[in-house]
Image 1 (spheres, chains in turn green, red):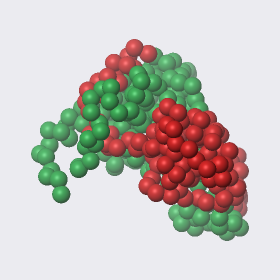
Image 2 (image 1 turned 180 degrees about the vertical axis):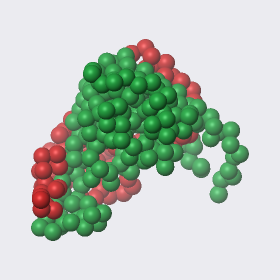
Image 3 (image 1 turned 90 degrees about the horizontal axis):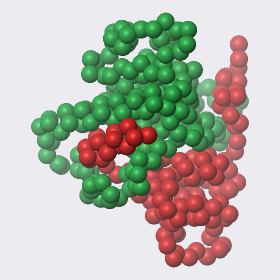
Image 4 (image 1 turned 120 degrees about the horizontal axis):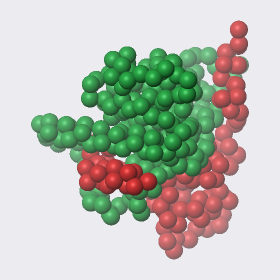
Length: 204
Length: 124
């Protein structure tokens, strides 16, 4: 692509903001994970209901210009001056999916949190990131009392590409959450080097 | 069975509100898109005519003396992202702030930076 930003020099130059999404089914531990890594800042987005209506066509009884607010979890990890990771917990409910495209735009990658008791809940997130070739890792949140599975079993159950890392984690602990982010960034690096080794496409 | 209206207007959806008076009913910012993690910085020494700005504009200018993201501004001022975008675009039109969009797609980020991120995370 043509915009390999000329202002994007080496470390220490222009500010670099990295976006990472935390996805997964309702109750899989998205808020817990973000909260274990950083102070959560609530973020409200506002979506016109008329736009929702174009997806589902059920705006009867709702004023056309009305909007609804959707709350997101948002957190920030400062690596150094001018190098910051922004974490966004994606809204789990499928009806808020129209927001994902904006959240996913320019994202470095995503953590898909999985609860082995309700594994199917994370299928839509896995599909979403697979289709858009956005690097992601699956973090299996090991809830107390839930049966333990091996990463390999989860990988098979989710029918994941063998390259996609599956990590067992405890979203309540920052070290565990940190390890999940490290594997995501490393995975993104591997995917990136794959793209780089592909034949270069001449700029238009 | 819940009516179609109930399906949207529940606790999770939050309140249904009219476009905010604070941005005079506007719902779309001027100019190019403002990413959630675009960094906004006040232009040093720039002066606006007081009549051009509302209190929320001044709050933004106060918070972005150093670069700050659109998401941080929305959260810190407790305003929805859509509203903060319109306000930032106003300030950009008046050349009171500069906006640094996260230009390169993530895939083209410098691998050196990503390694630095990994090392930084490990030190947390």
